[in-house]
Length: 362
Image 1 (cartoon, rainbow, N blue to C red):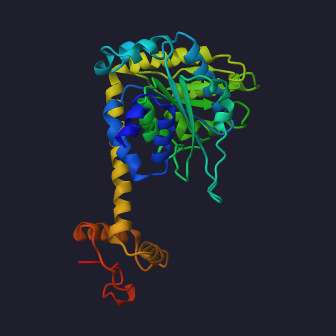
Image 2: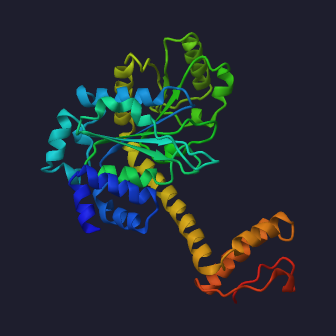
Image 3: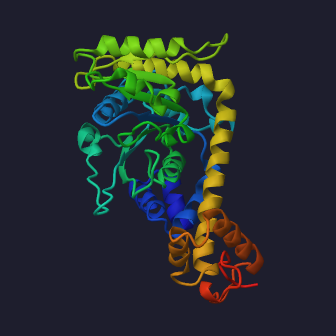
C-alpha cells in the first residue's frame, strides 16, 4: 500500500485511478490508502457544481476547466497555499502558470438495475490529451445527496496527487440534495431558464447553499426573467456588512460566453472567504467524521453483533408493528455496547417474555 501511496503522491495517473477505484469499491485497502496520504492533503481548492438535470453542468465544467488551464485567472493563487507546502515547492511554481485540475463527475445509478451511464466525461474530451487534467466519472451507487459515498475520499486522493483545483460535478439534483456544500470550498448552483416554474425552482434547498448562481443557457428565452427571480429571492435576505452576497452569472456554456465572468467570481469569493475558510473546512471534517462513525457502527453491528439474517427479521417485526423502531434502535445499540462485538444467536422473538425485546447476548 505504501508503494501505491507513493505513486499517488508523485502524481502517477494510473495510481490515482487505482486508488479511486479502491475507495469507490469501499475496499478496506481504500481506507488504508486515505490514512497514508491524508497528512499531505488540504492544499487543493474544491469547486462544487450542482443544479437540476439538464442545466448544462457537464458542458459548463468543461469550459471552466479550459479557462482555468489556459488563462491567467484569480481562482488559483499560490500565496493562499498552506504555508507548509509553500516553501520550496515546484508544484507552486508550476501552478502559477497553469494550475492542475482534477474533475470528479458523479452520475446517477439506476435503482432497478444498479447500472450507471458514466457519460459526463464524454463532454470533456477536449482535455483528453492534457496531462494537467484528470477526469473521473463516479456512480452514486444509490447514495443520496447528489454525490457518491466515496466522492470526498476521491477528492482527497486528487489533492494528495498534486491537483491544485478539484471540480466536483454532482448528479442532477432536486430540492434537498445538498451534500456538495459539505464537500466543496465553494458551491456553484447552475440554473436554466425555460423549466416552466421559476417559483418552484426558488423553493429548492439548493438555492440556500449557493455561493455563486449561474444562469446557464442564457441565450434562451426567459433567462432575464430567471435572473430577476433569483435577485428577488436574494433581496429577501438582509446581508450584513462584509457578508458575501452570491452573484448571478449568465453563461452559455456551449459557446463559452460568460465563463470568464464565472472564473472571476470564483476568484472573488475565494479572496473574500479566506478568513472563514478554516472554519468551513472544520465543519466539513466534523460532518465526515460523524458519517464515518455511523457507517462503521452499522458495519460492526451487522458483521459482529447480529446473526445472519437477523437484521431482516427485526425490520419485518417493525413492519408488523411487533416493535417500534425507536425501541429496536435502542436495543441494538445496547447489545453492541454490551457484547463488545460478540453475540450468539439470539432467542426467537416468540420465546421472549417481553414482546418488544429483540433478544441478543447479555
